[in-house]
Image (cartoon, rainbow, N blue to C red; front, side, top):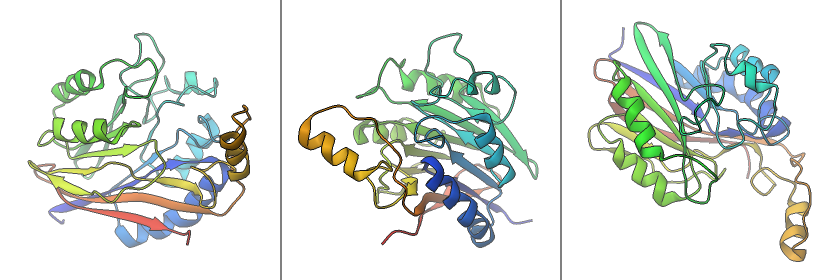
Length: 261
């Protein structure tokens, strides 16, 4: 058995074009990178906001080991009971007490237990508790060094701060939410893989996955309009992390992007 393994993470899946892209490209990515664990952020997968139980099950059937969410976790009310089902799906940990679901789950393969965590930032985001304290609490509760955090946040500064906050204590801190893949991947001291945003799996010729004409009208007129997912060909964005089996430290991080221009 190799002394290393890989984690494949796919950024925010946006609507049907994103789901189609995952269905088409994920088998190729798994064959190419041979990940031990595959994680998908599915918080925009149902019509651009939220996720349903059927879509979550679809991701599992396609090879996801865990699903992370974000600020749209509860936009589809039918997901609430599903979050209590014990499935490996996590919503932001730093929410009010009593909210359905959990911010941490564990998945196991080949003797490795990977903790998958989810938290939301507070800068330009609504009504979340302190993510740094919430992440500390999760990290302190773990007895495995294999720890993946999806930090769903708007501000790059807050994401970078979270990366340094977890440096040497997490295998990876990968940002989601802005839908635009950044080029700042690195290994922080102590073996923590970091990327400010993994990008999206969704329609390329769009504005963050939404119909560009609707967004342009809204910017030009200032009038409210209902957002709709662009019906364009989907792209795939994400990251592959190479991890040392014995220590849980990240050894390498590679951005992935398929499709688009």
